[in-house]
Image 1 (cartoon, helix red, strand yellow):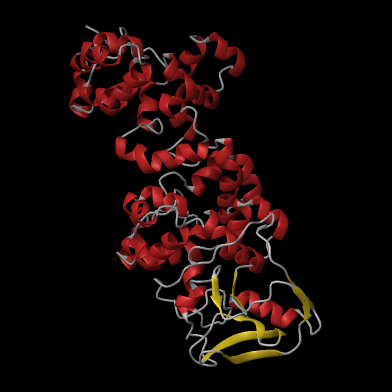
Image 2 (cartoon, helix red, strand yellow):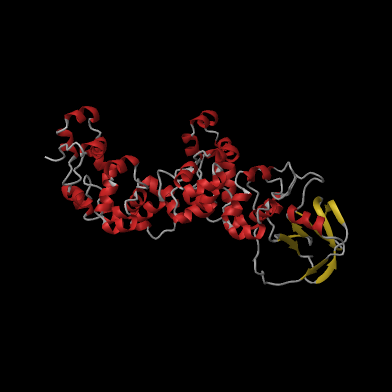
Length: 479
């Protein structure tokens, strides 16, 4: 536990606890809570208060000194620790003092600094129902989440909410541990360089900034929750909350997560369950448990959790990301990849336009031996590996020929098939560029006037038409 002592604190000897005082006048005209006498004028007690009986009159500047020599000799503690001694250590409990530079196996804990917080007149660990810290921190602390995301703590504390919260306040904050689906302090700092510059790795100050300012500014503090995205994806909530981000966050915590609402660009819990039937069979529509599964297991297993993002595709498609673990790749996408316009999945329309499962199997016998004609497995192989390897998904798209037919691209990308495919998805399909010796979309349009009147310049529809109807009708595809 964190404490402060002083020049008169004993440096040796063993004493028996004796008298206890719920409130006690201390030296200097101040008062202490949960006071337990050790010997003479040396007591365990809280940080001083200005008014007796008033838990909202904490000398917050003295609270910030916890962990340093600050008292006249008594042992100052947080309310939580002083209260525990007061309630659990009977008279005659032995207390031994000693002086040593050995910090022990756990090291020296650090205290939360509160002087810059609106709640600074209260001890953050005070269980008083009127303590505003309790309401404030509820937004960014979820005991179940904390346990499931920190298995060492779950093994120690189980799901004991009080013990988990105590750990977070005493150690977890300073260690940068994640305690809520809406807030990850390390991500918050990396996502907001202006704050990183100011706070560095001062996680306490970063948390204070988020609860005081960041929430109201709508700043993103987790890869799994983006309040602005939450409102944009849920128009009924946008209509109610508008720019009241705090109320929107409270709605998500109390209702939205259990309703299966989407709150992140990389996670859609309903899609996660639909895409992973083994989980759906177990969890049904228990969306919060499914959410926890994704955090604890799904991320590391590379399970697909959103139609617009596949971490395995994202990592394998870009050489600079291939050595990242899944969590870091997800953070990269949310922080940088989206802004850079990187591909994170294959759009359904593109898939429909150029992927033929039978063609892919028949022209890649090594895969056919493994997967047969299993459409899902072949499709996954194509977008996780085949694109980069230059494997062709159908007669209408040959990435090598795409680069050859478009010399500006060949000059730019050479034989970089990933770049060639990325260009096609982002630009080439809209521009009507030729993609194969067997298929020229502009020729298909030119020689099939009935389609031109329907699709106009929407070239992707010509691809889809050919795959679904045109090839069976033997329509002209090249000049």
